[in-house]
Image 1 (tube, protein in one colour):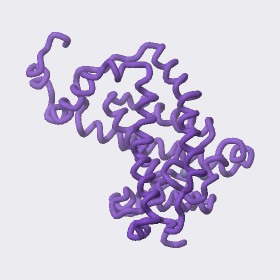
Image 2 (image 1 turned 45 degrees about the horizontal axis):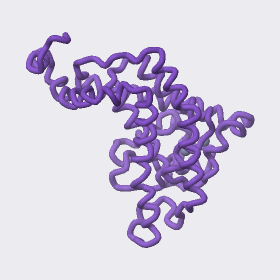
Image 3 (image 1 turned 180 degrees about the horizontal axis):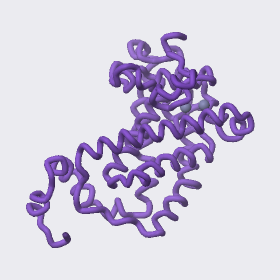
Image 4 (image 1 turned 90 degrees about the vertical axis):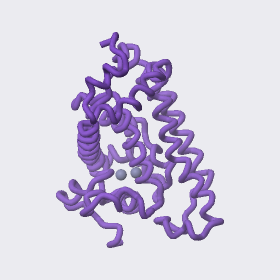
Length: 270
Ligand SMILES: [Zn+2]
Ligand SMILES: [Zn+2]
C-alpha cells in the first residue's frame, strides 16, 4: 500500500471513505504530533479546557448580561474564582500525575501505526453511538454503586459532588479513581469494538463535549437533550438534578437505564 499515490487510494475508497479521507490525510500529515508520547494527554486537556472556556466566559458575562440568565438552570448562581480555580488545578494535577504516566506507559508499549485509509462514514457513526451507549451503561453501574455503598461514596465519589450547582470546570473535579474509571470505560469500548483511530478521536471529542455540557449549568435551545427525540437523552438538566438531589439520574447521558430502574427524575417535575 505504501507505494500508492493519492488517486489510486481514492479509486480504492468507497464514497463513505472519500468523505473522511481528506480529514484523515490532514491528521496523518501531523504525525510528528499525533505519534508523540505527549499527544494523548495534550489532546485530552486542550479539548477539555477548550470546551469549558466558552462556558467560563458566559459565567463571567452573566452578571452583566441579564438576558443570558434565562438559559441558566440556576439563574442566580455564578461560580466564584474560589470554586473555579481548585477545579482547574485538580484537572491539571491529575493529568500531570496520573494521565501522563499512564499514556507514556501505553506509548512505550509501541504506538500502533495509523492506517492509510479513513474509516467509512456510517461505521464511524455506528461505532461512536455504540461507544456512547456502552460508556453510559458502564458509568451507570459504577455511579449507582458509588452512591449506594457509603464507603465508596465517601472515598471516591463525594469529591465530584462538592458543587451542588454545577459549572463547566467542575466536570473533572473528581477523585483519581473516578477519573481512572472513566478513562478505562472510554478505552475499553473502543478496544472491544476495534474502532478506527479517527473513530476513537471523534468519540473522545464527543464524550468530553457531552460531559462538559452535562455540567455547564446552561440549558440552551441547541442543548443535546433538546435535539435527541422522545426524551431518550437526559443531558444537562438531568445531570444537574443528580448534583442537587443525589438519588436520581445516575446515567450520564441517556435515560433508559434510570427509567428501567425507577431512578429517572425529570427536571420539569422539580
Ligand atoms: Zn453522583
Ligand atoms: Zn457530575
